[in-house]
Image (cartoon, rainbow, N blue to C red; front, side, top):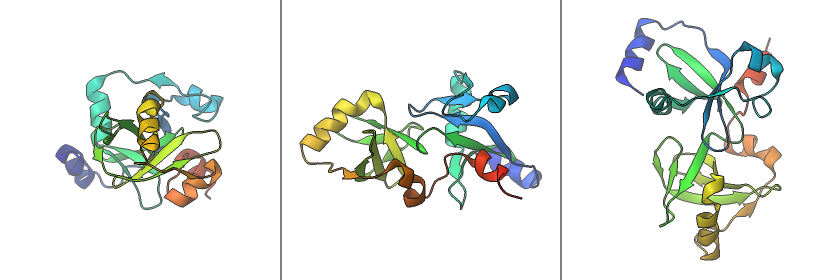
Length: 177
């Protein structure tokens, strides 16, 4: 987390959280979701506006983390902006040597692989859980064929509970009294 963000949290500790305004898709792209887009439906069907400003994206990615309940957020100064996830909290990129790094740029160490019923490949790493980027499936297939990764079958409905993340903090918090 950036030092300026820590200072803002200390200065303004009681800023309300923000839900529904930011989304992360299965390819590691960030989307802003205004009121109109949020009213249209959930993130997977109505993404919003693709963020393209590199410095903003870098700031979001440096300040992206999860709370104790598995809800992922971007710490925007004193405010937590909770993130709607299309598939998982991380999108893994695979290098030709089978090293992996997150959409945030963070390097990770492979621990386990999983494949769900639609055929998406997920990795558990020392950094966390995520889906392999579609453009890197050829490299991932090579790692599997070489026996470096041995995917276990998993049901997509079990992912959130098994790996401790929340796809939609907005929906979760809307259901709370």
